[in-house]
Length: 283
Image 1 (cartoon, rainbow, N blue to C red):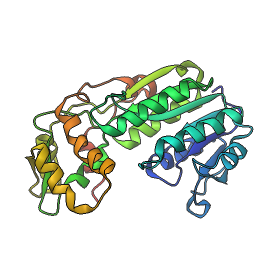
Image 2 (image 1 turned 90 degrees about the horizontal axis):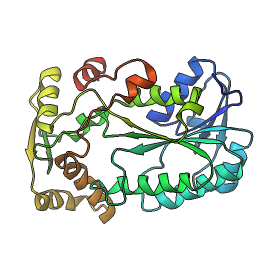
Image 3 (image 1 turned 45 degrees about the vertical axis):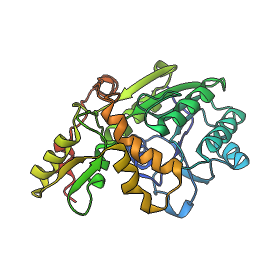
Image 4 (image 1 turned 90 degrees about the vertical axis):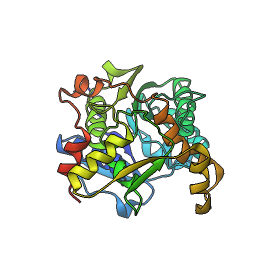
């Protein structure tokens, strides 16, 4: 382990950041937990809690002062997310941060099919230009999220066709992030694709959920027009509806189908598949 000073972890009140913080705590690593609501922060040994927001540069700079390595979970999805990311990255640079480990997204690109992956590309480029060392963890759609796609009628609906995605468990992303944070130098300037061990169609996702949960789940391949119409009644802003629909069109494009061995290479343990996750999380 080369890290001596505390590691800063954002998003510790969320699932992914919480997993990372718990993993580091179990290894006896000192941390600074940067959270919006301190009362919700986990109580972990050798950790201090610091209130901040991505857009509050002063608070972020103060919280990061004296820290070398930062785990940056992307901010909540919003129209202002890119501005929040830029503000926070500027704060990290001002605080003298040396290395940012950022949770990006699979196939991040300026013209990515999944619209939110475009935000991740811009964020990556901004971090690169900051002068700090960086490591990007590009994960795809979460295994944990698959059951949330199932409607009350037991149907997953979206224009995904026969496309495949190598979905990944947040727990596997977190333990990979922890390994990088513990010894960041060998990972400087590296972009990793964090995937599960198999690429599934949504028909296969539905079949697996059906088999494990003992209920009937199916997939309905909507047209793009049907997808927009079926989501129009939620009153969401256009950017969010676009993100919802392109979740499925990105799967249809097979851009997230490739399976990577990066998780096993970094951690020494292969990631879990959908069935293993479901059986290990019965509720």
